[in-house]
Image 1 (cartoon, rainbow, N blue to C red):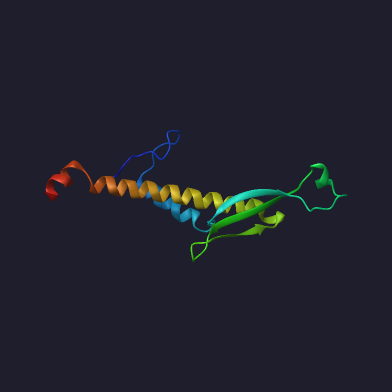
Image 2 (image 1 turned 120 degrees about the horizontal axis):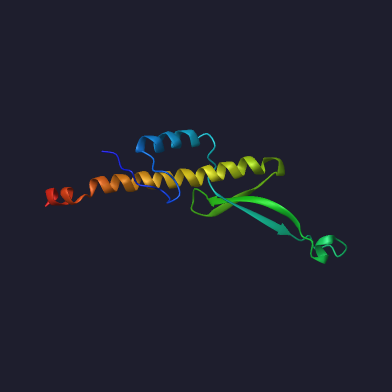
Length: 118
């Protein structure tokens, strides 16, 4: 039995197989983390940042490391677009995995299945 749940109201409904294919397509791009942009000041009184024109953006990726502590890294300007694509792929991957898990739960926890387990 295939579910036709939609992951967002604006998207057409996809089959489980289509979602699994999308997961496979995303895996080479996935970069774990959250992207942020920072603007900094250097502290030099003669610098433009002292007049309010900050340096940046400095693009960073933050994530939970193996010991549960938040860590991250700065992204070189030449890689920003690739990293942005990779982080977006990670978030899409998570959304698809959650949708598939919800569909699996819905198939297992049907009213008929609940009655059979009693």
